[in-house]
Length: 428
Image (cartoon, rainbow, N blue to C red; front, side):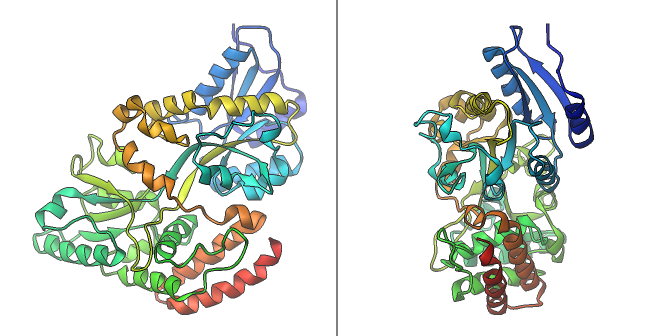
């Protein structure tokens, strides 16, 4: 018989007022402890409750699954309220890849509870991202990286290869766009990307800058690297796309607007995340069977750079059961659970060996194509800038947006950005 949650009045009040859609999972054994885990939005794609239930059945503990807002901004605000009040109401939380530095003071060092080899086999970049001042504050669960989607049929039709440089992408997009419009599709565009002034623009612009050899805004030592000619040239090139190969509406586009343009058959190239692959090849997609996927292009003096995304699990410092909570984190992020997550939900594992697993590849052949991209992924400077990261990203995407809008050129933008970041750097 499934046990009911045993919550103190204050705990019930807090969960009722701040958290959405909680449920209780429990083992059919004597209860050892009551652990709460903040999962995703509670929709059909959220595998976290399934894994948590399996852990409960295996260990005999009760797990309260707490659904959180879908918006990352709202989710972070909720966590900051809970952790800022040193509340023990949630033991395990799901954290975005850019949050470890921001939340580190409120999270336990998992290396104190997990075996020494707990991180063996994980992408080193992700482990480094989750290690703050020598403390492992989160375990990687699934990952993302920016990718280039393209119309295979149109490249073949017009005799073009997948572009290796941004300049090649620009020229190919311009030529195919003109030809498709001449053929009658006035809504066709060469390239669509995320250009709204938000975190998504940070990920796009970091790829442009890094792939031009222009650095990563702030390096691992905390030094500012953004004010250089290559970074400025990357931003100027991106600005040249607006109202040429990319619609003017790009300045307000996020992931879903760009996917809609591409999936309706109205774009040659798209920059987006791995989740698009299954949707673009779905039964209701106008481009089903016509889509290819590749690494993003690079500048004349750089290498391809894909900004890393993804989610991790951490344990609150205020948990009454940190050892059990860490064990739950280890279980969910284990190879077995990540394999199931990849097969059943199509999510990208953080354990390298799973990209050669035949069952994983049978469920999603594109996984093998992602491996090199993820291996060489570029993290945002979130760990090194800590609780200043939100301001760093905000300053970066606002300056980039001004370049895309034509209000600044690349050189002025990176110079202004360096000045603003230098003032912020006192915080890290």
